[in-house]
Image 1 (cartoon, rainbow over the protein chains, first blue to last red):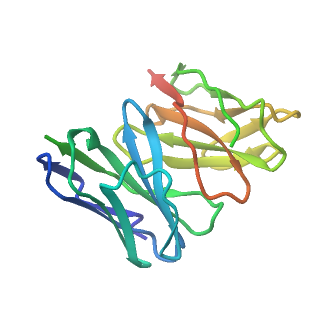
Image 2 (image 1 turned 45 degrees about the vertical axis):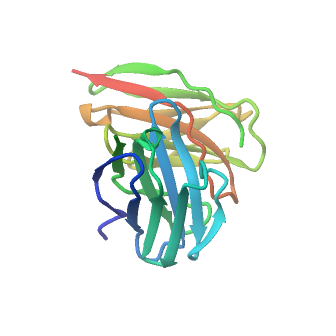
Length: 113
Length: 110
């Protein structure tokens, strides 16, 4: 298995632009998680899905952030409009069951100028 | 989830055992202890978890005290590739969420 796949690996954009991050979980995993990591706040859970349904989005910072999972093999995290404070590494992770270990992707490093 | 306390950094000589402590004095009976690590510029990686018994796998051993208020992750023969930030996480057994703290930065040296 290729593991969790994220794209792009690096994204540089200007303030105000829309940014879309993509994630392909490991096949057969029912849970998908989006995390954000910054020096100031560490690793934070933004949202997670179970069987393509959002379960907990309490970590989503504000309405500019949205996440979707249209099918079991694809999820997106969108920021519109982007701001410099959104600069961070965004990780996607998947898990076969609710309380199993989570497998993390390589992350997307986002820089908003 | 119970709060965990870890030293911010530790050093270990290559080939020696690395013992990483974690305090979780408010842990509940249904909470597990998980360990993840994050090598620079990579996503976190699961290492091991346990409830109350000591656990061992190909990567590490987990020793949990009898009162479950603290635990130690042991890397038996540390290598340079074990240099990473190690996170101790306490999670309810049926929960999905992982809450990461600041972890311990382990530096393995020659």
